[in-house]
Image (cartoon, rainbow, N blue to C red):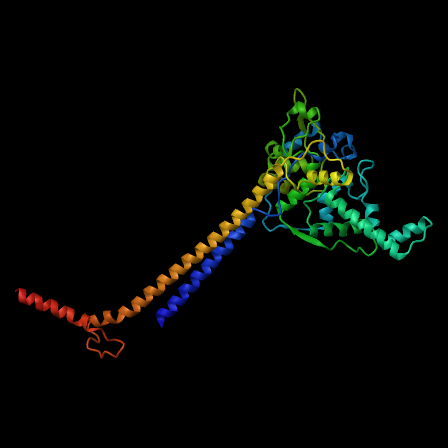
Length: 419
């Protein structure tokens, strides 16, 4: 009975350790990877539109960083920021900051004529506001007709977010939950009746936060890859690609450049200048550090089928029949296939580890069970050899077969005859 209890305890411990091995591997996998995160890819949106940053309203109205007289601020670099593993909760206001505010501004009014307001398109999705607007223009409209117009406006707004437009990039990186949370805040921002407060939220990892900022804001001006420009090239208007940002600055310098601004060496001879990059004062230090983390963990690539540029180009082709000047390369498909293959390999690896752990646990349990059974069978023989229950009845548990009793007697008899 005691041996059975010991065997049960050992089996339970082994099974528990096997389950722990099966669950620890996926957790480690999730910490080093996020299946929803992909690298930034392709040329910048400004390059796609063939515009320089200074020719846009965003470039003319952006808040610039300190100039050459304030370069002493570079000596006050803060310590590196390390993001926690727990992730963050983003409300609609946060999603608007990370994805829309860089172009459309805090109030959503944009910077006409290049960047339109988002307020009127959002208001057009409200039936009551459509009816009120028609009455202001002296036109009576039925509730059913207003509902049809509002539904058409909702479809157009959703289509613009998913596919982009002539001057607006697409946002394929946003999932449905993020889009619904963002739309709830846009309704609140536009004053749509019944929108209420910004209560909806989504849970995101820090790497995901960095991806949203890069693809929705940084990638507007910075292409994914390319040569690292020198001081004179910067003076001539070159913009460093995303792939070089983490080599040009360490994390602390990068965070300061994004959130407060910092002088940059430009011209020949190279001298500290104010530069052209706006200060994204509405981003926190931790969010800027998330951008740095994302660029380090997911280096930008040449092209990808889910990049905003490709999605916008496909939308432009389907809507107007005019595609980009050059055909899309097939490298994006290879990148997607490689990512899918890597994910499958990871799943196979996790399954193999789980199966191996289970087999080892079963083997150990089987060996222990066999050992305890043999120990239980042989233990009466050991006690009888010590002088207890040697002549026990064959029917009793302590009985030992005759071969174990007679073997020592035969040995002594053989010894006496030899003498």
